Image (cartoon, rainbow, N blue to C red; front, top):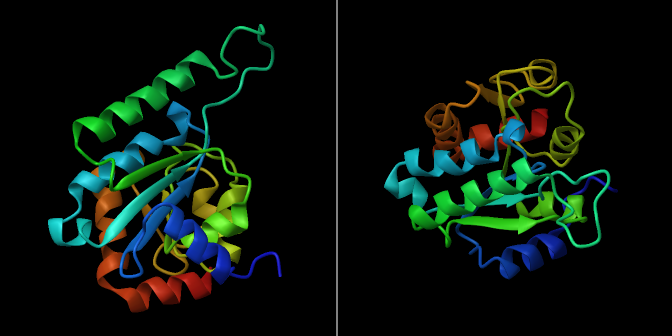
Length: 193
């Protein structure tokens, strides 16, 4: 039951972020850390054909890595990760994509947020084994993941998802576009996940 799509939460979360019924939500859940590739994901939006851009929104769920120890008056986040978040925010603002790329911060409702998505992207540049990707697969989402690390064992390219070249936002956009343009493939890969 934990991994069934929750249609009530899907509708509520999509409504909260103003995602219309005819729009597809492409999302990721990662720590906001340079090694996790959230900026690569955000940049891929610019490589989508304008017709596809009009049909989709991106959602990035996560917060910067937290410090182990900190003083009461300082940020709880690692400085390089906070800087990376600012870089992502700057890219979104510079490209005028605030209406298209949603940064939510940390969200504890994994199942609800995955229920709201139509495609899951895992942009991590080197991951041993991703638990959130397993969650997305269990929810029946097709996966687009980097061709690296444990992703090669978790995703069979062309069967339950697609691989793209690490750090290559243009290649990522091509893989996302295939799912947008071929809903039957999107469904087949989700079922196979």
